[in-house]
Length: 301
View 1: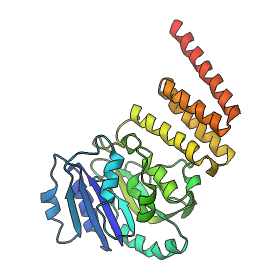
View 2 (view 1 turned 60 degrees about the vertical axis):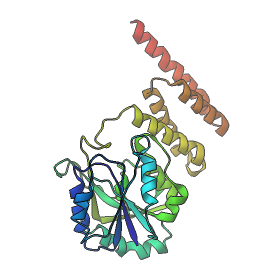
View 3 (view 1 turned 180 degrees about the vertical axis):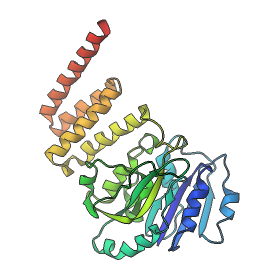
View 4 (view 1 turned 120 degrees about the horizontal axis):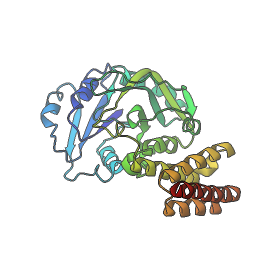
């Protein structure tokens, strides 16, 4: 059975989310709502849907999302029962009416292929529900190591995880949960295959009330550094030489974006030395000094 977990905090778009669940052709799912001590109580709204949806609501006494969005996700997943699969749906995102139906339609094949991550196609919508992006589809079966190098967006709501595998792996605690979902995809899949369902759509809300709607900031940049650093440190053997080079280049960019953090510099150099990336070690040092010289030259001009 499927658990749809909603880490709740904002009421503004929540009716749209519940309406999309009410509209599902297949209602063989349980909704677990984990209220992150929100000042916007959803109880009256939830009561409107309790006759038509199987909803289990829990209000946490302390706000977790302000300090760790990932820990809020994890404690919401812990609310679930014996469901085998879990979707973590944003409280402002919307499902097409066929999402659950297609999940069950493909489940036998997914189990036969021993796949632990399923993914739906996506569309970005704005605050009024209008489409603001193209409809993104994915290869039906794709290695997760290929997916992370393909230029495509990623949002937590579009995935369904095998719950036991997700509990074993967990989410890495990156700032704002940024890239934590992408890393979970590759780790839950064990760097193997993802199954994509392109016949049904998850609509991802982009607004001034969402993290996705925020511009790229220092916290997101730090999260991306942690993501690339972790992949290289913990899973470098999963990637070929060209992929490692791409990860290193992207990590370097986050370092330069962070105004040459000494802490990040030491972490990168230590990693390269321990991993035996000696050429990259010296090239990176050379590039750092080159960037510093350029900055000084501009400063004194």
